[in-house]
Image (cartoon, rainbow, N blue to C red; front, side):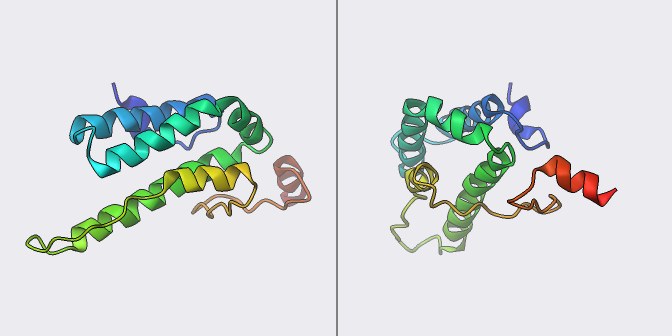
Length: 138
């Protein structure tokens, strides 16, 4: 059922990224209550994602490496959030803000998003295509 989530490959198609994000939502709804702040924040993000999916598909189709970088951005925000939760003392009460996934999505839309570097991924020259760089390397 969750085979796509646990698959080790980065998404190369918009539909793969879309399926991964929606499958992750299903997982967190199963783990937490729908009213949990984290689940609510991710649900708001997913609603925005669905409402602008055509625009996003066009934007990500121009550079398929951005799909993996976007997923990595989501994962990094998740990691920081859960590490912060884990660092809290059990008996202390803290209000920790959830990741702002919609801010990430809006930064992509206005082209202000700075994609993270992916470990082990080739650096791509913005003036040349990936195929050109591979040809030059040979």
